Length: 148
Image 1: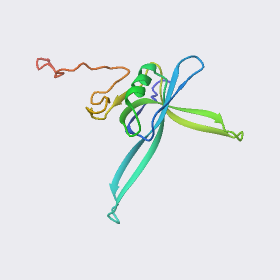
Image 2: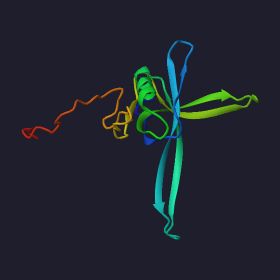
Image 3: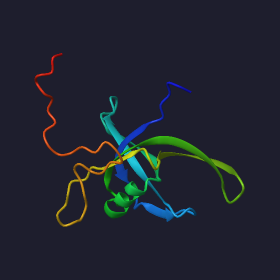
Image 4: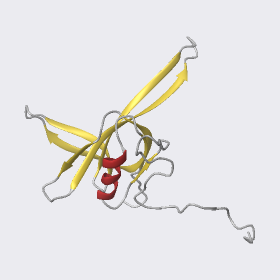
């Protein structure tokens, strides 16, 4: 179908340490969940309200899995860019179940670490790591001589 887009952008915190497994083909897969939260003040009661959503993340990109292995743990703040996928599976009782996940495939998707660098910890932060669109440090101001 032309003109369609399946893209998910999330910023959130990991609820537990990532799980990394080996697949039958020798590759790895990484899975974890992140929480996104919003808060607001209830107009009637004046009380502060919070709502948290949990998102299942699955990564097949080996380079991003290495970043997760080395730098990501429970509580880490990350930016994820991937696609929604729903898969069907059968539970132990034989019931069919469906799970929707944000998937970062081998050649697309982005993971950026958002935690600040901590000198006592070997955690990377700030610019993070991305599977594509690497930006070199430096001045990226536009040239003032552009004729339009």
